[in-house]
Length: 356
Picture 1 (cartoon, rainbow, N blue to C red):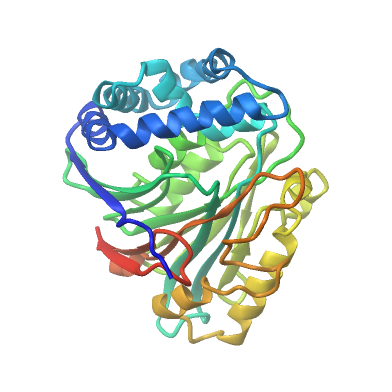
Picture 2 (picture 1 turned 90 degrees about the vertical axis):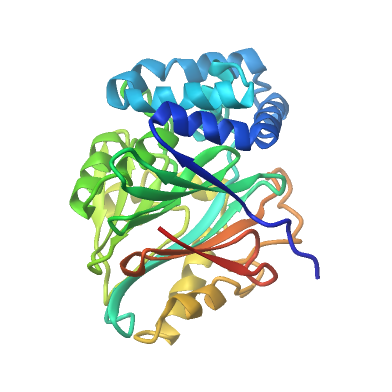
């Protein structure tokens, strides 16, 4: 059994521009390789998007970002300077999911959970997720110290930060969801609005950012150090807040709320979404009331059935689909300000603990 190289941990501090520059310098080769792989994938996709087309599509979102979070542009500018990427390509990398969706290049899969209350022995919240991406995706962890002294852990895939825990005890999971494409003039990159939400000092404040900004390609579990848990589904038309039942929230890649269920198209790209959710629900029910971060780590290594496998690797893709495997597995305990990360499938990669 082989394991992946150690997870790269990048320590950053200071202003957004300084954080971006330190990130870019420390991850120069990885960021440049991620950009090249992304542009190559788009050029080979069903719509054969050129590098120039992809950049042009992404840059249409720059004005929205400037109005919503100008500090994000400073971070991206610093990242471009540190990595040597052109600014427009660094910006495009932060719009990866939006651009990929625009060009019908979809294949991401993730399965996540949020536990609290009667589901855990102490009533505290636990988040857990398998992060399934293309087999060559690069994974790294940022440890950020902001000028006000607050700290944040941000787990990144191919240079985009998606999974976070801050020193106020707010953490998240994230899953791709899709409805039929619609024109959305206020569209923002997920990699911009999600970090802003997870810089907030309370769960209600984080939810408020997501309610304002989320536009339909992501589902989020949020949890805090007080044991509060919430989920949010969104489309370009609005959002639905989801609450745990018996202390449990589970999500894969399809919409679950009655409001959006009829619009869902994600299952057309990842039909195993239903079976993965069913498998996770069954595993959580079997251990109800006894779940701990350690038990969740073991649970996320489950191979289940071919259709309901949580820990994905070594499986040939369905004809016409993109190859995918578990590139990282993450467990978060907000009350303890702890994040555990396995750089790959949890069945073969060790978890490393990080405190914020």
